[in-house]
Length: 265
Ligand SMILES: [Zn+2]
Ligand SMILES: [Zn+2]
Image (cartoon, rainbow, N blue to C red; front, side, top):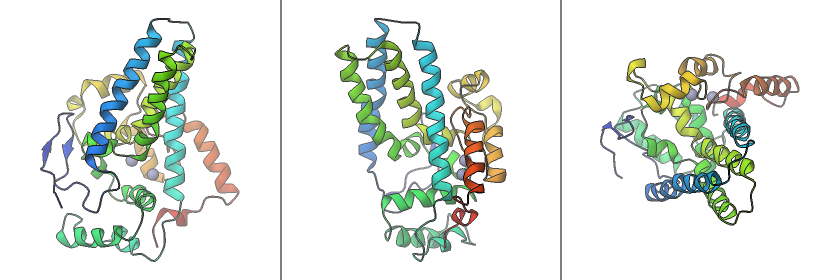
């Protein structure tokens, strides 16, 4: 089992002393290859689309960014409240009283995670984020990108390449789709940036500028979710939070969402 070294990644994120300790659901090499294909494929689609600009591209980009945020929030809401598989010991990890950096915790986590599949690990990851939110902000870019969303977005991005190359997709639709895939595929990375422990003047420009423009939400805005766990589930721009807050309220009133799902049993 390999422990990653501590320090800063080239993306300015501090790494945790230990990366994923239990058997990973996605090998690191697969994530590296996916990223190497994903980001250039989106750039290539935009390059081809740029050869025939139209007035619909700008509003389509805004809609794509909104939909990426909506997807981040809807997924987050579902995974927060979906009950964990009971009786496998996840509650022992969640309510662990000692140090989560201890060898005892790591051994317990390895033992329990080996009993459940990748989807159940993902559900648990969302639960355990609530009692220890800062941990996500110390993860590397690669760790945060290593989410199922990237592996769903990648084939769609490659399909968009083919459609753009063949001239089969209207410019506005191609731009909207590329923006949606970018935001959707890297949703967990954007969530992680909201938990970085750094002074505002240390925030890199590629996060500070979009926050200033309202394209990315701020850590303060995301804190409203952690303070309540009943609102503001979206984690990219935050534009869709008003809509999702209404949806959450309606689901709660109908008894379709229960606070019992927030903690493993
Ligand atoms: Zn949450
Ligand atoms: Zn969070």
